[in-house]
Length: 215
Image (cartoon, rainbow, N blue to C red; front, side, top):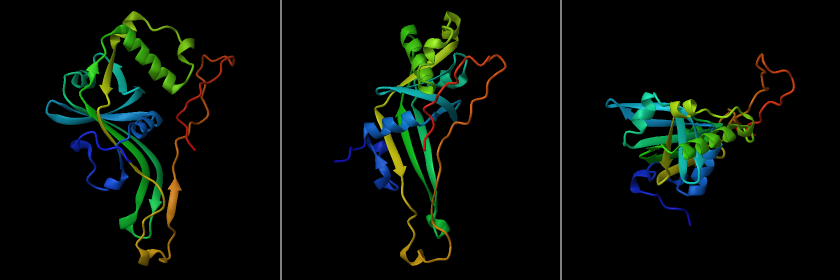
């Protein structure tokens, strides 16, 4: 049996068959996406900001400068919408109407809290770094107290969320399948290029690996 929507607010109305409310699906999308977009209200105007994120259990974290207007707004006690999206392919049909995309997306709603405990903040920053490159944290110069103070971390519990996905070929109308034009899927994937050393690398160090490369 498919999981039910956490609340009626997150229940998909359009293309409801593409909806998924299983935490496993939502977690997997959040973990696979290298960044997210956080939507919130600043001075009565909607603002959507791209930022890196990471997840620990049912909590999603993001961070930035302690002086950031975005993070101050996030921590003000209002609801935000955090969205992560992965593009898996362009879908070419035989009519413009049925062109589409294969994708995975997750939307999380809630009121984030500012992380004030230094131990939790440091642990979450380690999680962020390890997500970008597993094993890198232990080799870095330790974080200073001033750096920790200058960094704000927000935490959002996943209590109201949904996922929406599409996969597979185009959904052409039956009478269109013999139309003389190509139809199908052009796959898209995230790939890291070759590392570029900075001027201080002497050849003795190994470039970091990243999990954000998909076939």
